[in-house]
Length: 549
Image (cartoon, rainbow, N blue to C red):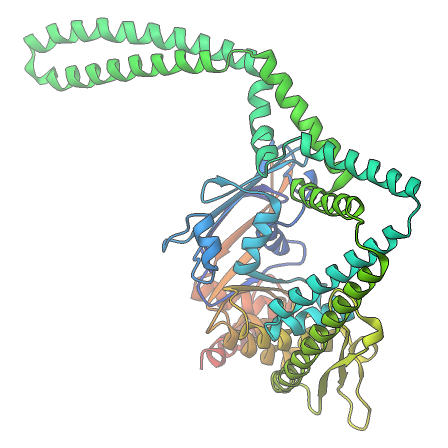
């Protein structure tokens, strides 16, 4: 659960501190006010990729910091990041060149590590995410998540990798000696290039943070020297003043408290003078350190360009190359024995894929029933829904042999057909909400974000969506951006987002509404007017009263 969110210079947000409620948090405001920017900032904090375009104009950097309760985090993550009962603090910054730095509980963290921990903290449902529900691979992944089949899926993937490796080795046996030597040279060269770099996760982020200090070392040395000289002079003058004030207080005892204050100031200035001297020695230009930093950063850039998007991917590529070199080096097995091993591995893969298929079938039946039950409470009169998992042993992949398809119809007398052919935008949004509700009971994620989940639905259905979100918020923290007053009325906390202009630059502001302001905002949403009418306020009060029943 998110306890506190700080945003600085992120897109149209200059500075924002948000303390959400533990239940349903509603965000409303005019279109373009910046509501979705808050969600984007939260996504950035938890590992989403970004560019320099997120910076507010004129700002040197953007920063987002969040404090989360961490009761849902696995024990391994808690231990790795030293997370205790107080929760976990996550911070991420981005500069004008698109470079980012991140920290988890004060320790440097990579983008992959942010995404890993973020996956246990917040589940995002964006404005266009329901379109991803049309993709068969997304439907399969959601089924696996519901059925908690991650371990079985991983086992099938590993068996599939073993089959692929044996197929490659079998193919390598058939290579000519020249082809084998050429591939070995290539793989060894690539592996050696990565190994010689002696990569460590987190080093790149540390050097990127160090580089501005090294680059400006002469300027920092000069500034610290000038500052030290001024502070040193001030310390000397303060000590002289202390002697004078002693004489003063000897005549007038009422000034004795000034003597103590001045003595304390003199000690503090002497201490500060010493620290400034030490700082200046530490930042003095070191050409070899500058060269080392630049060289390492250039090396990281070169390796990422060749072998992967980040250091973790480059290290994974090294492991892959190591396996290929070992496979080509060790061709002592004859073809017949490799064929036996391949047949055994393929049999194992098929057995595991069939077991996964059985688990998916069981999960599909339960998920179908749950989604149908949830959908019936979202304005569908005679909806039918089914999760189909068809097995094809001739089409085994790294995810098994199942082709998963969500089948749907909201029209009596019409057959079930794939969701991508039959559902409208509003129907997709409601099916996704039903799915998220079912999944929320099956996962450990503490917070969910819905960005306009009510898109394409009317007032009557909007009330049903609001009721569904309120029930969901009894177990999880919910963030919902909405334009429907029928949904907004169910919020435990209601935040209003508006955009203003400061010094010629747009700036979004967010404030939590009290009871009176909330009535006015609901009335505005009902009538589409900035000034609420008596009739609009009466209707708003009725909506709020009904929602609290």
